[in-house]
Image (tube, rainbow, N blue to C red; front, side, top):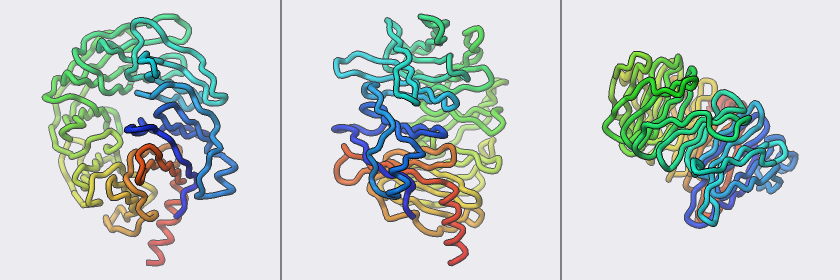
Length: 357
């Protein structure tokens, strides 16, 4: 099956793509700069599956450390490092590629950035382990949140609270109105993954180094369970049919109750997994070193076929707005192949294959 869009991305020597973001109109690939590609690209439509160089915009962000997209307004926040060693935090308009605002000053460094339920309010982290809250209408931060004692690894937002996980082995929950720290959860390893149950009642705090996860009732401040998932990245956690699904370093998919009760395990790949996506009654599993993108019947956990021939090492995966993005490289790590699939087309392909076999 051919991808809808294919293009090459030069990520530079000894470098990996930071990641991808999707809006209804654009795909953004972030590394040495931010490359913006239109999902309505006419060249891609006319030359389906062929390499396209007709990019919508290239943003001079510096080497991207972190980025976040506010898709409703087609705005992008980036945190990057420039060639002279300085940092650049910027707000960009994806429509025309213009830099709308640069954040400067002693509190600005290349850390994490995050929109706060608005295209005019954002958060950023500093090398001093602080979190700054910004309003586009003001010159300086509205609040500086202090408490972490090591690098902040992840930020998430729920119900008017900002969740921060750090290398000091703690999760802190901040009230965005007052700037006060409402809760502190102490764990035994650094925190790089924060995800939630479908109703947002349970917080999953995971360590990307070990694959351990702690499940908390975050409003009550109580620990529900601690489990080993083998899942080392945020995108390896998802929710299907009210259950938690994890994809592991061991190539296995695990199905859990939200309270951490393990229900089922099956082997999907012979190598670590990069992601898992549900498309109707089917599932797409994405490997890493095996370069394989597999289709499965989710009900029976039966392997159907591969989406295409192995593509080399798969480095990144993203989903959103009905699309799947896969970045891979073969031979040279400096040049990545980016492929974008429409999930509706994948579901039709899987249904037809299932009927024929």
